[in-house]
View 1: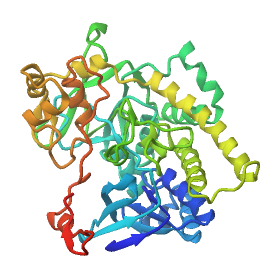
View 2: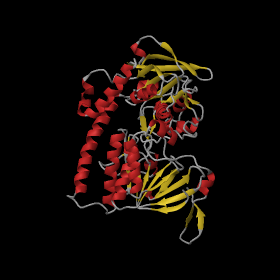
View 3: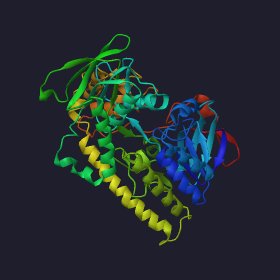
View 4: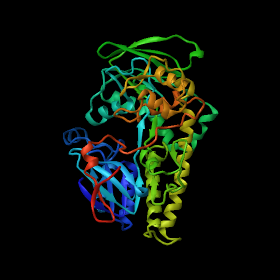
Length: 468
């Protein structure tokens, strides 16, 4: 996208939350522009297969295809391949660039909804940078989009319910699961898991995955983790041992072609934090409808807290209704609109309780992060080890940003999205591990020419390059 654009609302992110929100907003009579960095809408959940694969294997999640079709039919201005790398004026001005050409643009709106999703959470260990060691999400993408397994023999490790559908997709694509290693004990009957009974649909979904794994002879090994990966030009074996060093137990080596690791997800909150909204434990502080402390700025989906695709859709709709009311486009109190909002709020509370249950069943214990050995590389972009971060924190730079400046951890291409939470934990020095690097423009790396091409008109009418 190039040049300037004006609309009533900008929705940043074309995943489930952004799509549901854009549809409600457009049907409410507002001019909506939907901005997404990817070339296609849908986000990670409603990804689209290439035409030849769709013809051969069918549509992937047809519900998403139908949702995207309705968004287009509602008149939403969908701008894919458009990166939002900066913002000002409480989100009323967004700075964008075309991911293909680098051409810059501005989007001026009356309200902004950040539906920017989440990142996969990683946990460094010896050998995690070897070729063949990938995230669980990447393995799922290959298996579902391209029908290609990441390896013939696969070890899947980490924590979280996401490991189950990934394992099933790998089996369907023809891989053999050599080991499925879960850090916690979520599938052990206990009182803490009784809350799942209030979500029969989610419980049935998990049971279906476990049944599929059982039919293939795959057992979930609970209370264990990958200690190290081995190989020369790529991973060839992994060491698996008890999750806690104090638990005892033997360490065994498993030969494999690929290692998929996933430790849940981290919200992508850079945009709302850049705009100065109040945060709580890294997350934007929002009301039940997604409104932040910055007037006209709303947050929905996993950006507001990891809760899954169903919660993302509900949160997106709630935020859209709140924006309609904020801009004077909502229906009167007592109308069908108000009843719909009340229903959505009840649904959101139920799904939030289920998300809280998942957090309790699938934690990433602080001791696991603390056990990362000093020689382990934690920032791959800049080649910074855990020991270097600890040394920086111990020699006078006793906060996250001091350690970042001393070691350059988090200054690479990913800008700390992959390593930030680990660097924060290692450099905590008694501070909360929920610290995160400050959000600054550009939110993502952009060509210098992109930033320089943005001009603003001062009160005298002269054109001058923006100082941002």
